[in-house]
Image (tube, rainbow, N blue to C red; front, side, top):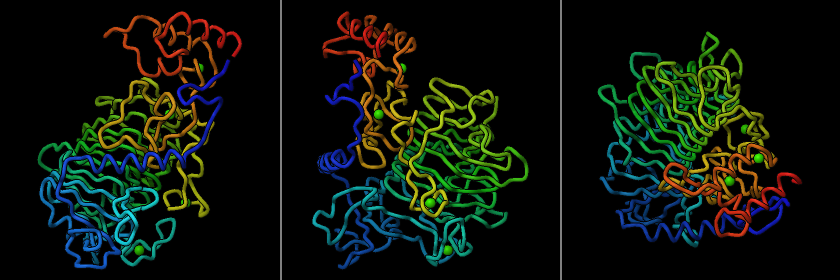
Length: 461
Ligand SMILES: [Ca+2]
Ligand SMILES: [Ca+2]
Ligand SMILES: [Ca+2]
Ligand SMILES: [Ca+2]
């Protein structure tokens, strides 16, 4: 008998709105229960003193808030569009570790100004100084070089809940205004562990040289629940890493492009200078270079410092030495990656997964949501059904009973997992939560009763 467990329903359910509302309430309670940090408010619609002390007395710009923040402060930013200044060298320059930037609040004049919903209250950081950008990087000649600059910033620097767009790092050397259009993290001296970037959309940025979306030089950045789409550069349209070991979890890096003059210029992510990226529950798809959209256009690394890949989708896989548990090349099936304007990386795209997506319920079965990332980019619960999805959006689709690997077929692969899960749990043989969720038919443990259920499903699915 096919049956979906835990939620008690039968078949597949897609009911996001009620989940979103529940999680919003829950998220608000969480925010209230966290230790008190000094809060600095930023709201482009603020009407009062503009000194940052409350929503209606908020700074109207983000820059003075950043400049006045000290370690331990939390900068809360209301919905709206924020620019770093008026000249091309303007950038949101993060100068202090231990400061958390949170976007997505309702803000002044709203019934609950503290209500946080990063989708409904989109908070955009943009380099489009004239406000005249069009899809396809048109009119970005006056845009500033880097939207965010986080040089030397460590993990305690947190950027959470922003859309980062319009950076155009097009100034030829000397200098580094030719890289990192969206975010630049550079330490020329020694390795820095940071910054931490969560729940962010980095889209529509460009660079003359490398790292259209992001450039990490000796910065082991952490990215969780991020969407890096529609950025471009000569080399590495999405993310360029030099002597850096970033960790990406539940990120989608898609339809970024590199227009360098050889056929392996790495539209998605490039590791060089000894870099070794870690990717878990991620999707690399549709990134292109002049050689097309093969595996080398998604991700390029060195044989000598290979990346650590798990439960990640890479278009064109397998084609090189890249490998890892749960890595495959199955089309993730985005809902509408180009939108009505036909261009990836603009605000009409939809990067959620269609219900038939093989990226749903196929993330790491042992995954536990990291701190600060227990919701997805829709502010819905990060882990739904039995198992986390790949990419920043979690589907509400339920997983079939007895279908451990979520391929909607109950076969020998699932039988092997049943045997593993059936054995007594021990340190050498841990039973993950997916075991219990898909195989434990009567909510006690995995035992002979469940074996009978599995057997029935197996012979008569
Ligand atoms: Ca512009
Ligand atoms: Ca679009
Ligand atoms: Ca799931
Ligand atoms: Ca299966």
